[in-house]
Image (cartoon, rainbow, N blue to C red; front, side, top):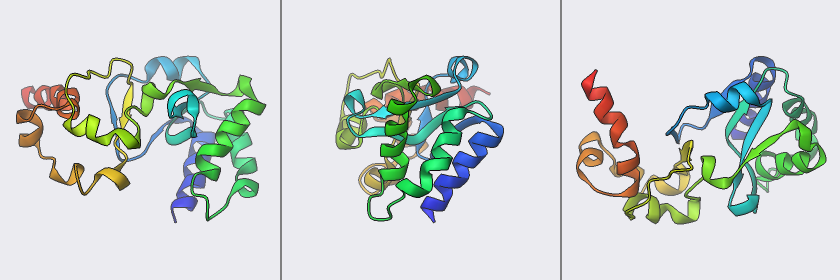
Length: 176
């Protein structure tokens, strides 16, 4: 079912454009500059995109050539045994083949900290994530140990990198 959702989100971006984000992505800054300037934007997963381009955050103009290419090649790249092949590796390959059709942002824009640094996010201190536009929380890896424990009260009272990054949004909402 998740793979069907991959195709559906690409088709929606192709047809109407906009921003796609997984449910476990928190926005920290506006996407407006990316929406206004580029046809299709993805973020590197890992430093210098070592793992590819992650599809948890995508910014697209309607009828983007890149998303059309991705949809056209999806079937040939799909491998049910390699989860990331069609969703992370394929866009990276297409980006190398068609560099003018894709804008790639550095790993810290959407995917810092990476899934292997969740303890830094939820228990660390002192990181203000100055380069992040969004933050992927890697729910499938962070739910049991971190996300399931979150509450508004916990975020407002406990001092850690994640809470400090999102606390202002809760305080702003309380003022409304």
